[in-house]
Image (tube, rainbow, N blue to C red):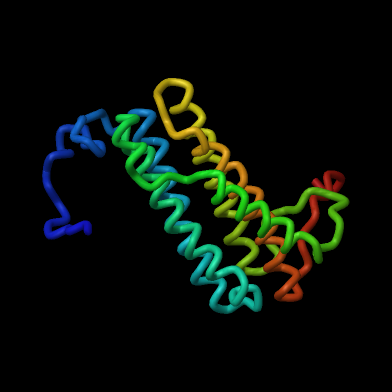
Length: 191
């Protein structure tokens, strides 16, 4: 059980922060950039959840995204734990999480029209927020890959984010279709 009795500690006033296990690192470290961007993604997915309350896609997507938020919190904790032994004893994203996203992608993509152009973010409020979440997810993936090149991370952290960004793309298309919204297509000659 986690207890947070006091929000401010003043320990970060010197430009460092504590990782799981007690090590202190500069706030601009690759590890903080990685799990901070995962946290930003989680907040963006929360925004998607609010938009889905007004979408016909909400009934199907809200439970998925609530689960994803918990998985992202686990991923953030995983990334905040530099010690491999300690990380192995903590919740991590794994193959089952990736496989579940792949199943959801396949299921929801099945009824969507074939793509013949790139999609511009839009297609209604829920769809637009899902596309925003997708772009934040791609940035999180880049940050995690950079961290993984420099330090030890869990083996499926970047894979999970890669699959999640694909899922968010399909979820955006699904939301647009559910809400009867046209997906704006890229038309390069209209510049």
